Image (cartoon, rainbow, N blue to C red; front, side, top):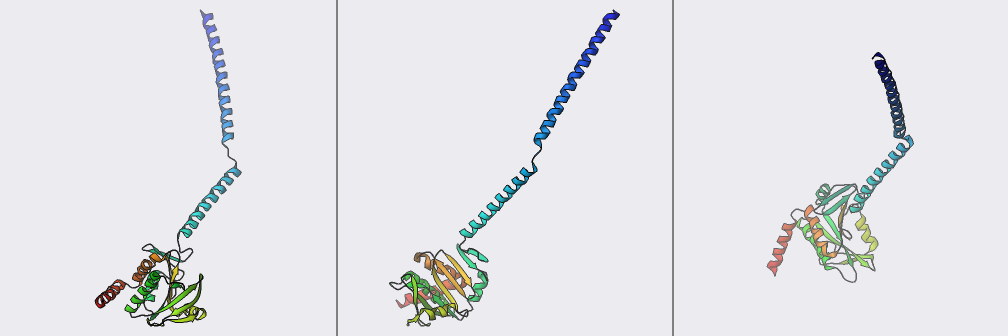
Length: 244
């Protein structure tokens, strides 16, 4: 019986030693695998740096694209001041609309300068000019027509009434430009192009894409500068109706 127990003990010890060796072997293999994994997880600093540079460049490109898109979508371009009032862009490098309006209505004399074709004047543009004239006179401001006449797609000369609706005097382009470019003169330019308003010092450029909207665009701007514009037109219309 003693011998049997001894034999069992020897067998058990051998089994424990064998299992211990197997366990150590497994631990060694796991350690090696972990080392391999760690080696794989280690990132190249140069690749990380390049990746960050690519991301930064992508962000810069996106920001630049958004900036360019906003400039292109706005008719004001790179103007310092850009306001949209009732769907019309007001642009300026010197002033905001409210300040410009307040100063403009203080002028004693304003030149109204549309562009009309020599072959045939567009009546809708003439009507827009007359809107300005009626409202200016209604606000006790002298209104002088200074029509730029277009011949073969170029401004060739001008017509002015010198503030008298019954007269029309032709003047040379040089003299006309001297009046329009004089910084002391307040001028309303009726221009052709995408709807927008440019305001600089005493001058305002009003762009209309077609003659069909020129009256609406100009009257919208007139009402911004002169809140009593509609009342003045109503009075004028009543007088005309009474005469008829």
